[in-house]
Length: 260
Image (tube, rainbow, N blue to C red):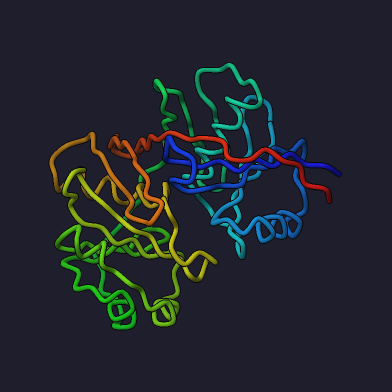
């Protein structure tokens, strides 16, 4: 069996920036273990698989070690493939996922994803996480899948050098660290060692938590964001109440074929 494989740099307009996702269009679903093996072989933070199902596309996402319920950059990459390589003509793409219906539309050169807003609450975290990140957060929250630590400055986010052995003791999908930005509304980084991803270059799903938080703190519904990994990524955000919009560009790096 031969399967098309695309590598797409998401949340960037330049190659070797943003976050690279693997994308595999399928005619029918493969066994779970086969998709997990492909994701491990790709060794990217996420590989997305999708199947056309009537008017929608079923979509699933795998890190090198686990399947996840939601992934932003691999959804953006999948929409890029559907529009640019599969000659899809509709104004919007409807994805059906474990996190419900996800919508992607074109807006000029940008693809805009419409995702459900995360629900989060303020919590206390253990000392291992604080020592592992080496930060002194002013607030800590827990969403559906991740912790979010709010720091005083962008500089503090930039200077984080995680001790992953300590962070791994915190049993959760991932850890968001964020602060008000110097040139954008807010900045962030994302660490997910238990999901097989030490630091994710650009994380669309974390912005379902970040957008409502910063919309409330800054008193605005349209925001700009940057994820401060080495590759960096730029995001255009909009708060819609129970939904958020996350916009970014994408560019194809590789088109290939898997033989299994």
